[in-house]
Length: 118
Image (cartoon, rainbow, N blue to C red; front, side, top):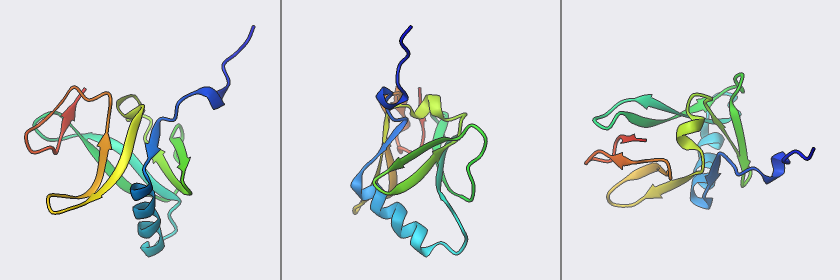
């Protein structure tokens, strides 16, 4: 019986060049020994969920590890189902500065854009 190769599975998260560049910059300025960033979701805002980005010192049990464009991003296991297929970008313009997520699982966002629901 044939089994699917893990190489054929889609990444849980893709990272744009801008996001990878920002992660590299953050890691180069970090004052501690971090291995990358950890992405999660928290109950927050008027739509229910908000993206949470933190430094990661170590891989936690069941973290999804994404290595793309030379950077490491860990996804909290409780957030994988909300982030599957998302793209992590970094935007710096007159309206916002920070990581943004293009998430195909989102069904809606609040008016200010701080939170989303699936």
